[in-house]
Amino acid sequence: METKQMIIKNNEIDNKNVIREAAALLSEGELVAFPTETVYGLGADATNEEAVAKIFAAKGRPQDNPLIAHVATVEQLRGLVDNLPDYVEELIKAYSPGPLTYVLPTNGTCATNVTAGLSTIAVRIPDHPVALSILQACNLPIAAPSANISGKPSPTAASHVYEDLQSKIAGIVDGGPTGVGLESTVISCRENDVVILRPGGITKEQIEEIIPVADIVMENNEKPASPGMKYKHYSPEVPLWLVEGNAEAIQQVVDKEQHKGKKVAVLASKEIYQQVKADERFNLGGNLSEVASRLYDALRTFKEAEVDLIIAEVFPETGIGEAVMNRLRKAMTRYIEQ
Ligand code: TXA
Ligand code: MG
Image (tube, rainbow, N blue to C red; front, side, top):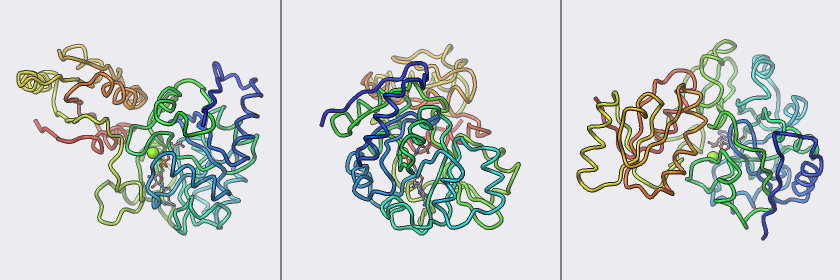
């Protein structure tokens, strides 16, 4: 299949033709990748079981890992769930559109393979003009996982999607690089509190302004609350070590491994990046938001650089740092303490 590349420059939604074409393909049951504020999504009509099945095939995604339904409005969101607790209405007012996904009892509107047979459905309203225009134009709930091959880092640019899925999907809408760079926060909405199933763009602190967070579920649980948590993710296909400490501590590990003949890459925030010497380096930026937005690109870049080892800094787990460390922990093969 030829994958059509559809480009929208500078988020100019005046390119109605691209939006219309993407919406038409989705309505016909085809797969189209599009940008959201977090990462690129691989969309399919969530009410069409056959269309949704194509997502699992294209990504090589395990069948028991459910998808997020994307909608443009709160009314559409209400149309997919059994009932909406009052506090969820408040969360929606505060953070949607935005990188927050609500897991709620499903009313059965979406195809059963969207929810992988669970009694709940994950729904979110993305905060990206291209995503919202496409959702409005097709007027359908769109199931959309990250548009990468399963196990690879999520795509933060259209080129990443092309690299993984060209000739497997009908189209890619290129709206430039995404903003947040890590996936949405997924919360299980219980009666009087929520459980964070995946840390992401909306922080625990932000959620707690509205409703208590009972727990943050981390990976390697025997019985994962969120099926996606049990799979190894975001793998850069090269060993990745997390090294605690300052530039000096990181340099010591780099030197030792280089001495053994390894080609070593370092992934660090600006300050450490400027001080450390290695075969390859990637500057993740000066603050945690920049680190989040550049992380996946860095992991993909190093795969191409054919290094033997990636060494990454340990970041503080506050705000978006929680999501950054969650993804790094999933990708790492070794943790070196101070
Ligand atoms: O930012 C994002 O959320 C991106 C963009 C494209 O919207 N999407 C995304 O989708 O990251 P995906 O499929 O890569 O991750 C969805 C996560 C998985 O960990 C999945 O197991 C979990 O949400 N999930 C989906 N439905 C669920 C449900 N009913 N109960 C618990 N977890 C669910
Ligand atoms: Mg994903």
